Length: 424
Image (cartoon, rainbow, N blue to C red):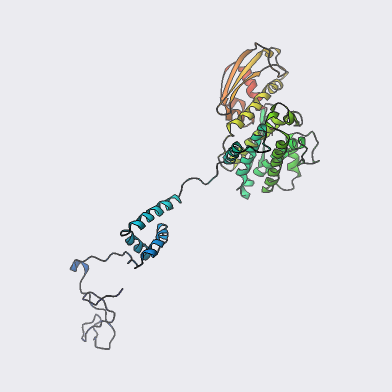
């Protein structure tokens, strides 16, 4: 900036007049070294204020200033440009309204909401799509829990780094009245799911991931151990791709072979061998969905990540399967055989919360239904997720958060039998 000279303007070319009055006592003769002029007055002496340090605005026309509004809202203008825009906003109402709108829009770009996708998003989107336009080859209702749980687990695994794939996981189950455990990793858990899902694949005529590495009648534990032993190195993230391909193949195959009407027959009755026991295909798919959810929870705990329970209608199918298996488990868990008098006794199992219900559990020696008029000798009530934790071996029977009344022996028999439904 330039301006007229005045009594308060500093000119670097000013020199002292000739004489011995310089600060160093030397003469200030013409042609000598330049001298710093003596201050003429201070701010306090004159009563004037220091000028503000605000940048001087540029002289810009309306169109240029209007084009700078977006950059100004994002605080991307230079100080001079910002000053010019702000001066203009006090004079132009149209630009002031536009600037306010842009500032509000910028505020929407800064959100504190989590960017993690809802794990149930895929299921809700598919449900909404199928409600509007049903698929030509729909997934049978008894296979939808497995489809949803494998999709949720796959979403959890998607962004795992190498360190998370090797995070330690401890598998737990009950056997012989005591809790057993086996240590593995996140990748080892997925390998376990591959090996046991292979039982369903064999029943459907698909390729068995273990091939001839195990006997045809090998159960889940033997198959898992065989797959772990066959790996020259600990499983890594490479197990995710074959697991996804296998789960997609299972859903695709049962969708072509089954229908919602197969709950009472058809392909839903196809037997699936688990070695020392078997299940019809519709129940085997619910069992695989249950195990997928339980192990997904194990993985989420290992990496300190929250994981929600399945959708209520899916959770109900899993609980219903466990409740239908309980009578046989009660009969086989009694040492030395069952009391014959138990044939006329029942226990009411009440599972509370979303997906719950009530089931009458016969306490007969052969696990079959009790005769008409059998006595209800006990009542157990517990939350749905707690019941599933008990059935998966994650909580001992004595520690289960269950309310109960009636015959204590019958109550403990049923709680202990529920824990024996678990396996590796």
